[in-house]
Amino acid sequence: MSALLVDELTETTSTVAATPATVVVTETFWHWRHGRIRVWETDPHPSGKAIVLLHGYGAMVEHWRKNIPALAADATVYALDLLGFGKSDMPDAHYSARLWGEQVRDFLDARRIAKATLFGHSMGGLVAAQFAHDYAERTDGLVLVDPSGYPPRTPSDFMFRTLRFAAENPILRDLSYWLFATPDIARQGLTSAYFDPRAVTPELVETFVAPLRQPGAKYSYLAVARRPGDFFVNAPNGIAAPTLLVWGGRDRLLPPRLLKPFRELIPHAESVVIPDTGHCPQDETPSAFNAVTLRFLRMNVFNE
Image 1: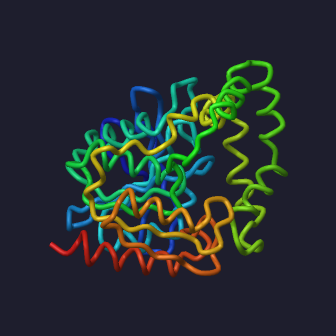
Image 2: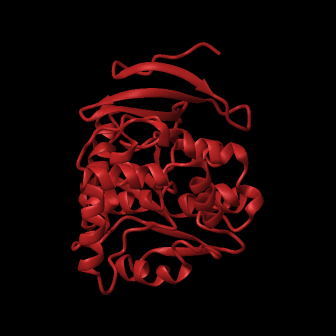
């Protein structure tokens, strides 16, 4: 299939395979003020509805590859590589949930999208929740998948200062990143994130390792350690959007008990726990994940 120029903000395009074969996903690069952003998008949907997918820490648009075809039945789907991750640019920027929220807002403006439903996994869930608070008028619905970002009950100032010191010191920062950015560490992290070890294939590991080799990756991958206070949800006005919380029942990184504080944060939220699934239900058990999210969207967001 020939490449399609999406709009004047696009530099290059290519076609990305998706299943079923009737769904075409196009890869583009959008020029944002902080750098190039990789975007996967489906053909425009006649409903005019839009879904934006936000990956987790260290991940990329490929982590949604098993969900995009199902979601494209109801809306135009956009998956973004957050600044600093995947194939997006990796500048030495002040990374935070709010910076990535601005990325989403500016992307919607560039595509002339008034409102969208946001899906956020892990750290992407933090970004989606913060966006839904800061830009409530731009949020149709919210699907938070094993989200991070709920403030600890008793934050440790000493721990935060230690992490910040290590990440800000150039020698310690480069040493810690050199020790961290290896295939073995990536494999160990993915093995902790998935309940079924068979899901951690060599292809999946390589997908997560490739961005680590980029020169600027040390800035974004160590951003949480540099400014940990920027990675908690700050929503004093609450979150009004229809919300679904999806959790892997065997998540060892962010266990299902964290559903309780997120329910307190968003009292009207529905919640689903998918059994025998780790931290990444959208990738580990995509059939169950797609079924529960589509049911929620059709009953609460796309039912106009």
